[in-house]
Length: 69
Image 1: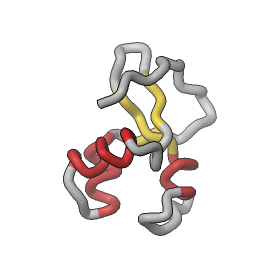
Image 2: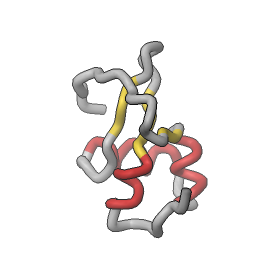
Image 3: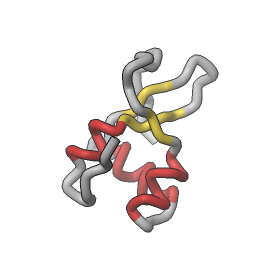
Image 4: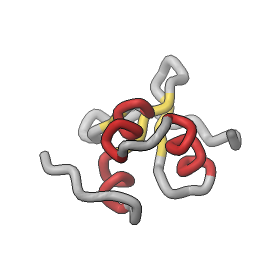
């Protein structure tokens, strides 16, 4: 996976784990990581260094449907 700049999550952003996104799209975690590598999904690193995917990037992703609040 490409090295990304680490940013802190903003409190008003809805963030999802890789496994949650994989389940939502009915794909494997590996597929989600590939989408991240190819720039289809925006990620944010938590202070502990874990990857989170923004709801906005999922809504913009051409592979899926919209997530409602």
